[in-house]
Image (cartoon, rainbow, N blue to C red; front, side):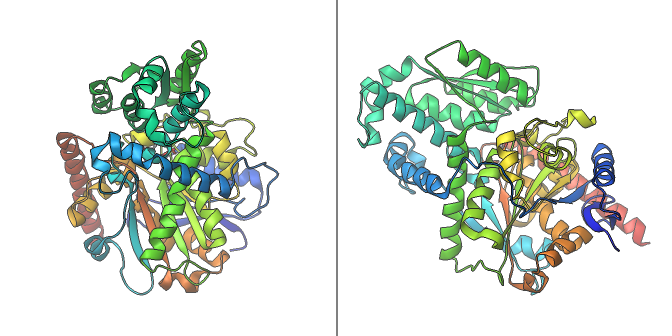
Length: 477
Ligand SMILES: *Cc1c(COP(=O)(O)O)cnc(C)c1O
């Protein structure tokens, strides 16, 4: 075993036998080719980031101070949010999710013994207003745009209470302005609902992957939904183009926006406080592992960036992507830099997945360049496994998530049971610390999925789990 195990491949998903691919000679081309072939075959795998912890020349446009400032802004905006949305009364206008232990799920699906540490979820699937991880970033950027516009038009002065943004004068001003966004669904829900609530014209450009109920929910709130035949990137491009031709229009650009990224990253500060409240220590002897589904990269990237600022080498962040849409993996593993994009189409994949929140063919280059030295690794999983985890979570805990949101659950298995995962722990010198480790699966969306659609997901998951049990029993006989 002279080489470096960079990728690890499961033969058929959950609980499957795991084989290891060794890179014997350390030659990058060989490594790329092996990985590329496996990605093309849509083989689920764990890729360890060879640039993790390596210094880079990239100038990072975000600081911890900027994240704290975004958190302060959100605290200032809280009374306004509370006034607009009665569901925020209990939290006094703060949009935040719980950090939850899962006792029943742990018993059934997590070796809840001393050797593996503790498993939690960060329950963004339940976030109010938007019903997904997009709530913090999207709502934050809309409020920043609204406040800046009101200051520029001398409706308010910097430092005035943001409640002034609810005045009739502000409403009249906003009615002359448009805020638009391109989305596969959830970002549109977050931004569209907030935008319409303030009285702006709201336009959401939806990709072909977007679920009809997400479009309907927006239309019901007076948001204009523009449907596109193409994928997420083409919906974003169309929105960007249309906004350019209208000076009263603001386009929220998921591929490039810093305010959006900062809004997402505020979750890191909030999580740190929650860990402290629950007396969960994070240090070399108590490593923290995070598993987050990744689409274009903004939400998982923002959170990872924030957590790395707060916990440094003691937090280990892994992203989850569908086997047919692993855009961040392709960008980080198959491009040597982030000046230009390598998409999943470039290697012959189709970007077809039921995980609409993750149906993105090209990662944000801004986020990719920041993640290069920060993300520990990325694993892929097929849609069938998304449904399986969705089902198991509901079955054990009564928690409903959407398919994209279930992707995080495959992570701990990869880390703890695969050769690549074990290699990572060894390399980091934390194998012995694993009994004290904390694992957080980020559940990223699902609150507003209509019951009938959720039922379909659940039944499919149940069927997939039964199938797996039957296959396993046959093998055992
Ligand atoms: C958008 C989304 C993600 C990923 O966020 P990106 O910023 O696109 O990487 C994950 N899960 C759900 C449910 C989402 O809607």
